[in-house]
Length: 77
Image (cartoon, rainbow, N blue to C red):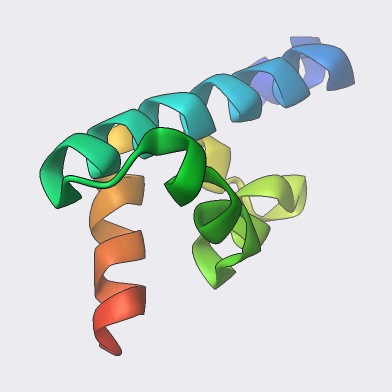
């Protein structure tokens, strides 16, 4: 895709970090867990690891999709 050639590595990393913040905030509110507690759990999860793997292109997904993916992961589905 053409857009991929224009997006710098720094921009990708910033986008991923912003997505993580948005996902963790959404999940923390839903799960009634402090965001600072959930952050390390999310980053250590398969979803978090896959998100930081830029080749997965998961960072193109929206925060709600990523939150659902994480919830399925922790539910064992």
